[in-house]
Structures are given as C-alpha cells and as structure tokens.
Image 1 (cartoon, helix red, strand yellow):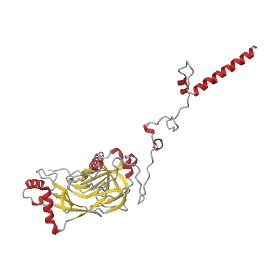
Image 2 (cartoon, helix red, strand yellow):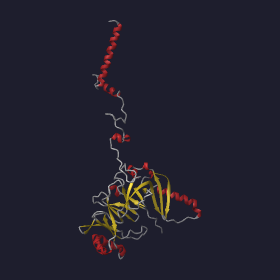
Image 3 (cartoon, helix red, strand yellow):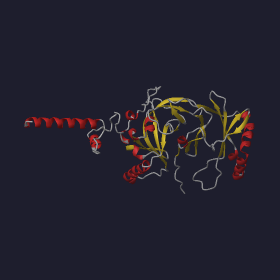
Image 4 (tube, helix red, strand yellow):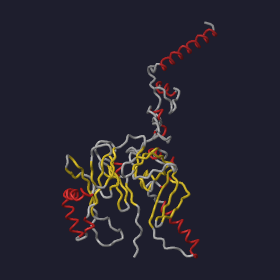
Length: 380
C-alpha cells in the first residue's frame, strides 16, 4: 500500500478509537482495564453553582438558604385595620400575643441587647425619676420584634375596653429613682458631665425595649395585643355592692383560712392589714364571675423592720358558690384575660414597682415578661 494511503488509514483508525472512548465515557462506563476513566469524566462535567436549582445541584450553605431555595411559603400579610404594617416575622412564643404597657409605652422586651440602640441618648427628669432612652435600629432587632415595631395594636384597660392604635418608633429604655439633692452654681459644668455619665451608665444596661403609640391616637391601658390576632376573652372590673360586701368577705376569706390566720398572727392588731380588698371581674359577653382578694401591704422597701407580705388569691363563682382557683399568688391584679378562649387565665399584675404577666393562660415566653422599676436608694 502506498505511504499516503497508510497515513490516511492510520488517521481514520485513531479517529474511530477516539469516538468509541467518548461514547463509553458519556454512558458512564470505563473501558476495561482503565479504572480512573470515570473520575476523569466526572472532572470534565460542567460545574454547578451553589445556587443552581437543576437536578443534582449541590445544596447551598446555611447562609445562602432563602425562601426560594427552601421552597418555604412566603408570609402572607394580613389586612390592617389602620394601615399599619402586618406582622411578617414571628418570634418564638408568638410575639405580641400580649404586651404590658408602661406609661402608655408598649413593652416589647425586657433586658434588651444594648447593641440594638444607636446614639444619641435622651434624658428626662420627672421628679425623682431619671428616664433615659436611645433610639433602637429596627434592622438590628430579632425578626418577631422587628415586625412589632410598626404593628397595629388593640390596647385594653382594666375593664377590658379595647382601643385601636399603632406603634411608631422603638427605643431602648432605662429608668432609675433618684433623690435630687440639688447643685450649687459652682457645680454647673462638672454637674452636667456627671449627669451625662449617669445617663450613659444607665442606658448601657437597658431595662426595656419599648414602642411609642401613634401620637394621634394614644390609648391608655394596662395591656395590649396585636390587632391581627383573634380577640381574647376579657373581664370588666367592678366593686361589690355595699349590701353584699360583708357576706362576700366572710365567704371569700374562708377559702384562705390558714393564710389569713397566719397573716393575723404576724400583724397583730393592725386592722387595716386584715381588711380585704375585693374586686369582681365579670366576663364581658360571657358567664364567668371572678374575684381578686388581697390582704396586707407590700410595705416600704427601705423599712428595715420585718413586715408581713401581702396575701392574694383568685376565686370564681361556680354553680352559685365560690371556689378558690389554683392560680399563682395574685397581688395587684389589674386585668384578667383568656387569651386563647380556652378557659385558662392570664393575669396582668402591678405591685410594688413590679409589672408582670402570670397564670396558666400565658405562654411560657409571656410568663417571662416581667420587669421591676428600681426603687430609690434608701438613705439614712
């Protein structure tokens, strides 16, 4: 065979061999005796980016997961009766199920992270109260709290009367009670520097995260709830009639006879300490009739003498008779609410500078919602 023909034949043979190998690799089969061929073929595949959604794509890392990559449904905003923002992100425990109010401010969290705030700080003096606030940066808040920053709220007073408002602006909040001893003229510059330093120290450990109500519709009350949630069962306060009070006292005190006897032994002839304070709570639009009973006094925190603590309990009229409820010590009950409309009660209490939500009707996270305003330093 002439040399040119040999060269052409050899080239054709090489081409056929190459095509055969390529077909084997595309089928995922290594030619016999070549164990490394599969690995070589996989290495030649087109790389798939972390965000690629094609079959066989690698999964994104934790920081790259979003609603699109997880297939999670996006939150559906609910209609807002006042045009405020709908709650799109929820914190554990359903943020905003129940909120305490303090000076008409909605308390969103207790002991917030100081890193949520941004200077400058503002100081206000109201008598012995030093109030320090710093604007919170909404984007720094946890998701559930972020959603509350501009939420619509229904505010309730102690009688269960609702009032619709909206939140506008979130602050870190601290407060201290101080005795103002006054300053002389020579203390002006040094005194102002001291005032600023005190305020900075106070806001460095903020007491509360609070939100202001829309100034066009401020609702006074003791607790609040997101407006997009189902309405809770609420109770109206009322004082017992004079002609029923004596018999009511006897029947109610009999429910706590051992505690009343122990209190009497401590207070001696202090008749005022043994006079019960009775408030009736009637369910609005429902049949339940509850009674809050308190005896004794919280006392002065600066009084070094021993003093009997207050006694408090709840009772309910059931089938015509009063029954004591297995509820926590209920001192300073301002409101009673059935949040889930299942019969379990949550109590809003205020006593001796302490604000709290207690009771089986409050979820675990809500039961932790309590704060105390520090009393003024005791002086000799």
